[in-house]
Amino acid sequence: MVGAVMKSRDDIAEYNYHLLRNALSSFSKNLEELSLEEHEQVARQASQSYEMENLVLQTEEARSVMVSPARLDEAVAEIRARYQSDQEFDQDLDGNGLDRKVLRNALYRELVFDSVMQLIGSKAADINELDIHLFYEMHHERFEQQETRKASHILVTVNEDFAENSAQVARQRIDEISDKLGQRSNRFGRFASRHSECPTAMDNGKLGEVKRGQLFPELDQCLFSLAENEISPVIQSEMGFHILWCEKIRPARRVPLSLASDKIREILQQRRQRNCQKTWLKDLKQQLADGQG
Image 1 (spheres, rainbow, N blue to C red):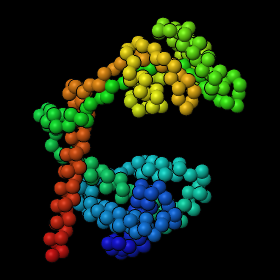
Image 2: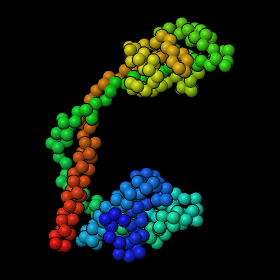
Image 3: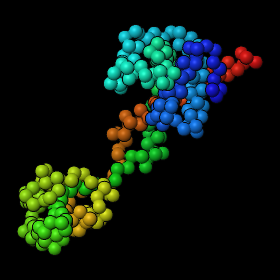
């Protein structure tokens, strides 16, 4: 067990919980499913998280935290709900070196740890308007919204196994639709619902708001060359033949600070809280080292 000092069977069982938690978070696997290399990585992570948890649980802040039996019952129930039966639940716990008592105790420790870290994080200084403005000015690229186009299409598929959908017949059909439709965009939805062989026909052919790169290359290139309210000529893709309607163009723009402010505040507050927690943990480790020196 890398770096972890075990003192009792309870310590080993609680460490096993950290092993399992890190195995699931890193690889979505139980311990027995891990490769040797994966197990070594999980063991290193578990040793670090277990030792950090032990360190935090010895603080005055941890002794002031109260976890209600109801909250603990809820945490256990959340895990139990992942299994179809009590038997499957107990077998999985046993296979990972745990039982219900150990799980309950491990979850209690985890809840106390999380509460302490939230308490420490809450001591971080508040974010002011200058902080928000500076972040916005230094990270313009994070607030750029690319051009989108509100589009609809009509599709006639090609399937050489059926005579009515051979490439020649499909092309003839789409050409007839295109000729009748022309540039009368007010009729596009009606034509799509009547003639399109795409599921979007149920919604008048609507593709919704489209960004560059979302459609087949041929369609993408055509759509982003159309003017607003323009209907395309016939385009061929691997699916068949299409007619596109560019209903509306939403140009690329930068989200204004007034709309980005709340998100920036959240980002900065979380960053400041993490830094506050890291500093507190670093001081704890230093105090421990000084006490052992």
